[in-house]
Image 1 (cartoon, rainbow over the protein chains, first blue to last red):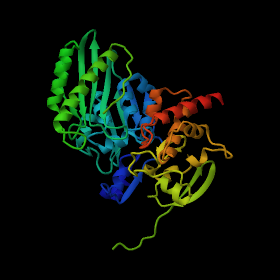
Image 2: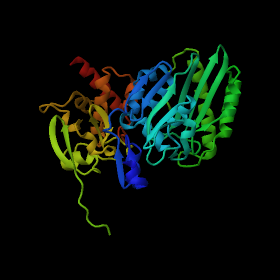
Image 3: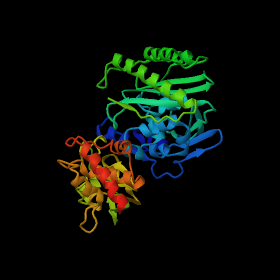
Image 4: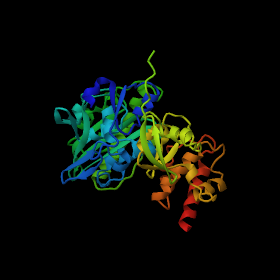
Length: 278
Length: 164
């Protein structure tokens, strides 16, 4: 159907971004192809090593799922998106396909090295999420392709993460956000993934920040080095949510907080966090 | 100028406050427009119309949604609960009574939405903590009360409903 309708068609999932964009006439599609009554696209399955999340799964369903209880960064993300009403409608596939620079799932799924299964008339392909985002509001999806599911590898023992966003109020997009996933062996950090959200055209993976932790103990000093690397790597636009410099400082603080929580969780502690509000 | 095209209409079956309706709607019709303009249920308010303020919150299949950001066709084969469906036989629902008794409203514009968000909260959580309440109503903006009396009202409603 998308092939027939061509570029004038938009896919409608939960509608929590697309419907407001259409009201503002930022999006003006000739045709909407509604996925909401397509069966079999909403599920969270829990294999031994691989988790699968159907594209039409609502954020609230992920928030309440068993995998979110097991992988805290997924819960931080799902439970922190906008508000209850939006989470009841909005979907993970829709959020990814929208590729909003301030979207929450991008940074989190990047730290988990997730993959995105896309389907189209030519069949299926599985993209690493690092190849899925192409530019602001632009994904690697062809106009006649859809996201069908998200694949997440179960993090190994000793690995945990945290996602913190700073928002002016619940329903709005984050001013900045940070996703951190750490793998600890005793006191030493074996693996680190650190991704920034809302401070660039796409989520920004900060390898310098990861390098500051890898092979090191998580101390205030190494954490500060990672946060400084994040500050330097951020490339934010000044807007009504703050100046570029403000957002750089903000995102460094969020990285620090996310590292601290991720490290405590990786040591087996239960830490509940929520996003920060001004 | 575009010529007048035949306006496409889609049949939907929807139960609103327990009453079944067989309707034909334009695909672009929003759920809130269906409720207010077709069914004359004007208790559901349009505040911002941008999916921010939550004044238009209703329950769709038991879940709070912003009815200004859901198409009416999405309610097909579904059930909608609006503020008009809360009172039974002229008796206010305990949530409504608690908002009144605790001064949980002033101008009342946001109240229908807050009542329905509270309804979903208490449906799954009979004894919500302060944090649970905060999370449940984060998508509802009130410009009068400062929220303190809304918190009191929700706690009082929960107490009342646990007794019942």
